[in-house]
Image (tube, rainbow, N blue to C red):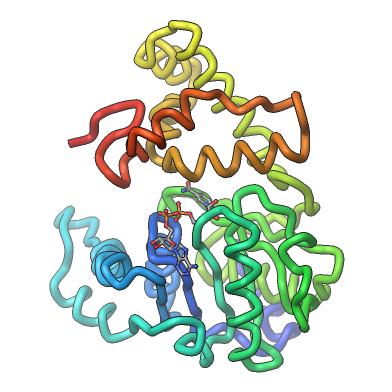
Length: 292
Ligand code: NAD
């Protein structure tokens, strides 16, 4: 078993309550992973409709029954008892760990962290699910940067075992250890990676995805690109992957990498154009492809 209970005992308190801020694609996946492993969830979002839809999504995801290939009513009732929608940062106060999964924007995230940190206990961990923004940058202004780290899940969370645990310049060893143990508790495979734009996986993945979008601008058909990538052995094509990730998130992530790496990654204009046309990917039914 990949789980190492000795790490959990060494590092003290286990996570019993996880706070998740941002009830979108990733917040839902992360919350469901917690419910499935018996961790209670407090969830918040600044849009009430997104919170309501998010909680519904989490319960559905966490009560999927493989045998019947559907949602189990019994499980759904049990899961619903372990998740609460809460209002703002104050509602997350009881959490042992808070995972932030809001829009990929450093200013928005930092503003939230300052608010959340005030409400949490001294031993609670604050973690960001950011795809690309350096953790050391996000920690600026925190009172307890030692309790802050990156905890980067991949999409879709139920299928992707990998979690990047990212140590910022001021992250304590104990925080890294506790996040490693917590990731194992969720059944994930944590890897501790260096801080920096895009960390490890997105330094590799984003340029690949961006090149695919550039090929579309050069006139290559979307289907031809995705088909070639799949025949090559990728589980899905890079343009379908854009739609799964969310075009707005791809755009923000591309901007962060471009700001850090310059002309090594020049974001494809077509992604920005799709976002302007409100084609955000699977999350709103249309992106490179139509999903409805
Ligand atoms: P999303 O657009 O699906 O959801 C974001 C949610 O955050 C929305 O419901 C929105 O209402 C809420 N939100 C925005 N600002 C907020 C604020 N100030 N306070 C509270 N809630 C707020 O986005 P997502 O795809 O879940 O991405 C969330 C984070 O996870 C981003 O940092 C992204 O880079 C990262 N990430 C995304 C993926 C992916 O494949 N989509 C994978 C790994 C990491």
